[in-house]
Length: 155
Image 1 (cartoon, rainbow, N blue to C red):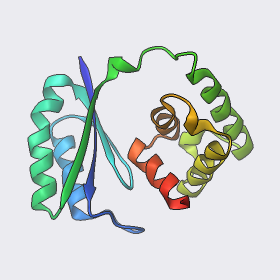
Image 2 (image 1 turned 180 degrees about the vertical axis):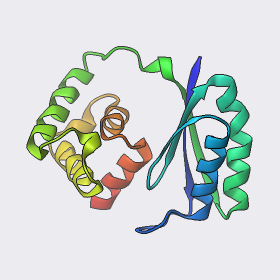
Image 3 (image 1 turned 60 degrees about the vertical axis):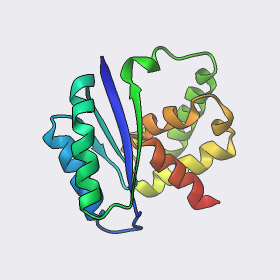
Image 4 (image 1 turned 120 degrees about the vertical axis):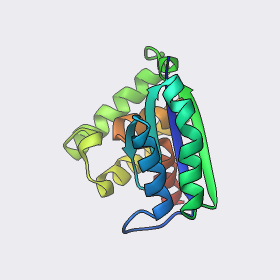
């Protein structure tokens, strides 16, 4: 079984270089042999269940000793995503519309356009659909925490 660990470390920093606690947590995940996606406000690490579970103490230790005041973690099985459900189909359509409007796949956009894409999807009601944040995060190539940050930035 494969697992996905999504984690954020705090305190958050705005623009510029990521804080040392986030970098150290990412390095610990990479050193454990996990596939790592490092975003501005969160990290996703994927791998075999044993490898992910074994790496979690090292990730937490690295973040906390480098100055993190909080580590938030969510674990899920990769198989849990399964095939698209009927409620996701309208979301896929909305994502394709926004991609067409912005002139490219969401994952290939720069951060400013990704933020714009989230605003457009919110205006069109995408976040009222089931599993919207997870699906949109995957389409953007970011963590779901990053999507929440983009949403909160507009609030």
